[in-house]
Image (cartoon, rainbow, N blue to C red; front, side):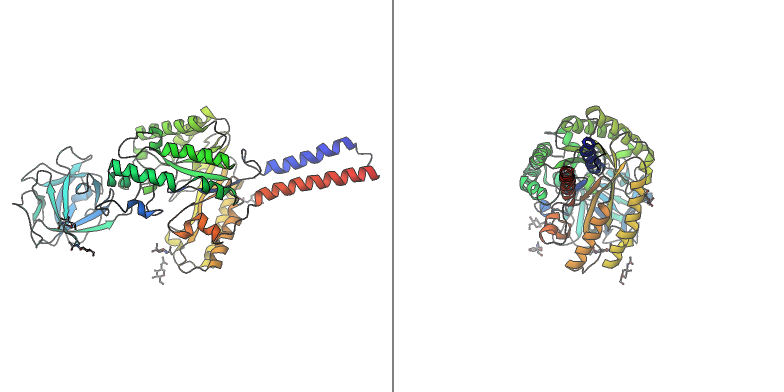
Length: 536
Ligand SMILES: *[C@@H]1O[C@H](CO)[C@@H](O)[C@H](O)[C@H]1NC(C)=O
Ligand SMILES: *[C@@H]1O[C@H](CO)[C@@H](O)[C@H](O)[C@H]1NC(C)=O
Ligand SMILES: *[C@@H]1O[C@H](CO)[C@@H](O)[C@H](O)[C@H]1NC(C)=O
Ligand SMILES: *[C@@H]1O[C@H](CO)[C@@H](O)[C@H](O)[C@H]1NC(C)=O
Ligand SMILES: *[C@@H]1O[C@H](CO)[C@@H](O)[C@H](O)[C@H]1NC(C)=O
């Protein structure tokens, strides 16, 4: 031992330790190797199912924007139909309702609505005596807004022009504005049975447009100030979490006065999150969850009626890049920033890979204008798309991350799976895919959303623990890390804090320990070396 030049041994050991710890770490996460994150879902981008009570105060709350309705004439016993799904007349001719007979509401007020056909055209009526067509691509300034009057506690409705004339169905070929006087609720040509086929959109658009500006401002201020607070960051920091992924909507860039119906104030809340994060040594990923026009038609992209209009206009895409520019310039120098996610869950059916990759490349360059190191996170398309598509896309040179969301839900594939089958699926299929992507050259891999919930109906606490454990075991291997969906939720199994407090998710913050053991190992080596050195 003496003949090895002793002065090199310490630096050698130190270097070994350094290499060991650096090899495992994501830049910017001190004392931790990878992202162990939680999403702050339902906070700055509203999702009604996360906190249904937000919508409780809206009158006529089952007729929000995007609600799908069908009308059946009580006298003809036929359904109102936009012929060909839109682009021509509206008839009252179908025995069985399907897509052409389904209309999406655009809410103008509690009682006034515009009605949109499957193909996207709006009902229009030129006035008394005219028939209704579905031909205009945008609601006309006059003639496209209708009162829908409901009989209390019944599905019967009357539909009236703004001038006061009621529509009626006298013949199957048309719906006409020529009912004389005010109809009663008996079986007459102006009475229809309205069926609500779905009203599953409860996002920022529905909330703000449903309440109206003043009341919505009140509701959202209260929510933004109370749903997530500094004490949640304390909780996370003491339970092994080092990162939060924060969904934001595009309107944040227009604070304090975003375009109607959106309500300002989310920017101040995001600023708070950054300072709370800094206080507790937590990092932030800002995630653009809702882009103008909607990238997936869902409430969490703030879709008005389920349409995916983001990719159909260059204006939407340019506006989105401006939002990224705004976010990057505001937070690039903030010590709590870890990364910016350019767009959450674009839909494979609605957004082509070419458009998406071109946007991601420009988004990457936009972030790089302000920060050479912030991670640029690109989300995998949801639906039918292979995540390898983003590895092959040359999005950027450094610190690019692909975000993949893993839910054993939202697909008939998982329906009726036993708890053991769910566990097995994560070990086999998820792990295999994760390893394949970890191995692929280029971006790091992030499991940016997953949850300790499944389609099993009566899972025991132990079943949930096993499912949580297998997910942590597998997702811990992702090269960038993971983030749980979501911090707080009305449904307890989705609620991270509930899972931790009730031990449904047994999560130990092993990464800091890894570092500590590294230090101990180094000290032990050093001491033994010095000891031996002196003895010999
Ligand atoms: C329905 O009930 C509300 C309050 O209970 C009342 O104000 C309204 O006039 C009723 N509407 C009809 C059409 O009966
Ligand atoms: C409608 O139903 C609710 C509860 O079922 C009842 O409280 C209310 O009085 C009813 N209103 C009318 C107008 O029948
Ligand atoms: C699930 O099981 C139920 C009851 O056995 C059955 O009716 C249903 O078709 C199954 N669904 C799927 C998607 O396998
Ligand atoms: C990933 O790389 C490791 C190490 O090179 C190898 O053992 C493993 O088989 C690879 N896995 C896949 C799925 O390519
Ligand atoms: C399982 O999936 C079915 C079909 O999508 C759904 O109706 C049911 O509510 C789900 N059950 C649970 C426990 O998630």
